[in-house]
Image 1 (spheres, helix red, strand yellow):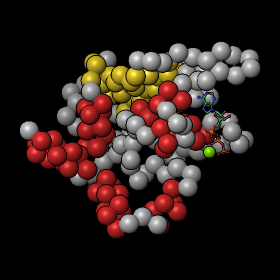
Image 2 (image 1 turned 90 degrees about the horizontal axis):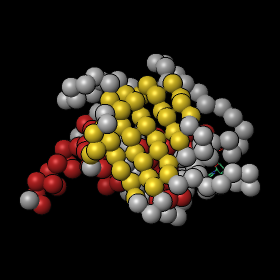
Image 3 (image 1 turned 30 degrees about the vertical axis):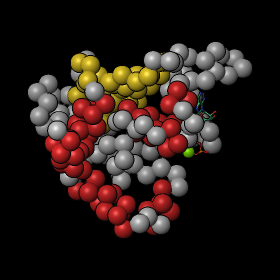
Length: 177
Ligand code: ATP
Ligand code: MG
């Protein structure tokens, strides 16, 4: 799976709609401290279903919504869209995954315009061997976390990398029925 475009609106410091085209090959994002580089990685992870406010450097899920500055009022919603190339099992070719959060109303997800459950989004990415907890997303401070991880935690990371994490989700689901 290749991510072709990341689109943000009202997400953290990205108050105005921003479009990032990601071309094949290596992409670097550079900028001064506090300009929003880490926010971009968090947007990616959030749209893939991240639900831990702490890993988004917040105390509640609504902290991802633009909180306002001296010059601009806060926003009522945040939306992040990920456009990928074709995904196995999805007929339409390109796949657009959108997550939106509104103050007081929680999160909603869409895949190619269809309302879906959070679980559908996490399965889509898990089957493509990626997702909010993919070891490919290395945030600031993560290297030391990998080094000090317990063997069981490290196994979970390896399973994500091997692309079998989606199978565990399905097995758990089947066991509960
Ligand atoms: P560094 O180089 O220090 O790692 P960075 O480019 O990774 O910096 P980020 O951490 O992505 O920067 O961005 C931090 C900025 O985002 C801060 O200025 C912070 O005020 C702003 N920010 C975070 N959450 C919100 C929010 N909900 N509303 C408005 N601004 C926010
Ligand atoms: Mg940073």
